[in-house]
Length: 303
Image (cartoon, rainbow, N blue to C red; front, side, top):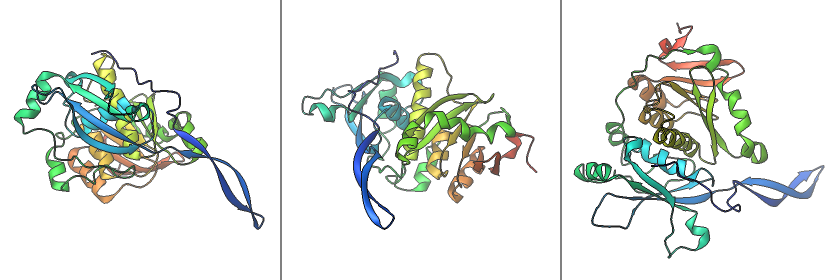
C-alpha cells in the first residue's frame, strides 16, 4: 500500500467566519469571528465479507475537517479493527454516486487486506461499537467499560526512559501546530514526541479524542511506508487538555508508554494507566507537572 493523499477541495477548511455581537462599553458591537468547523465523518470499512463489494458503515463521528484519512485509520487502530499497518489495503474518500460532492468528503472508506478481513470474520466481525460519537466523547458507544478493557492491548513493556525536563516542555512543542486554536480558541491538539524531544507530528480537532486518532493514524500510515514501527514504544503522546480514559485507551492500543496532558487526568484514566504500565502526567505546564503513574520511566525518577 502506498500512502494515500488526503486532498479534499479547498472549501474543506477547519475554520469558518461568522459575524458576532460582543458587548463593549455597555453596548453591542458587531464584528467577524472565527469558529471551529464541526462536521460528521462517516467511516466505512470494506473487506470483511469477500462476497460483498459494498463497505460497511462502522461509525459516524463529529470532527473538524482535515487529516480525515489519519482520523479514520487511527480510530480503527484504537478500536482494535486494525492490528497493524499490514491490515491496510487502501484508504479513500467515498465516490458513492448516491452522495453529492460535498458529502463525499465526509465519508472515508478503509479497505482491509483479505487476511485482516478473514481474521475479523473468524472473531465474529467488527466490534459492537457502531454508534454515532460526539466531538467530546469517544467511548460513549461502548456497551461497558469492562467490555472495552477486555480488548485492549497487553500492558506496555517499553523500557525507554524519558527525561522529565523534556516531558514537561512537550506542550510548548504543540504551539506551532495549533494554528486553528490560535484563530478560534475552540480546537484541541495532540502530538507525538520522540524520546529525544522532537515533535514528530501534531494535529488539531474539535474533539480531543479525534486529535489523538489523527496522530495515531499518521503513525500507522508512516509505518505502512516503512518510516515508523508499531507499536509506538519509543514515543510519547502529548494532549492540550485533560486526559480521559479514552485517551489513555488509545495510547495503549498503539503501545505508547507515556502520556502528558496540560490539564488534569480522570480517575479512570489514572487507573488504566497504572494497571497497563503507562506513565501518565497531568498539569504539564510552566515547566512542571504531576506524575500519576509509573514514575520509573522518567529520569530523574519519582519518589
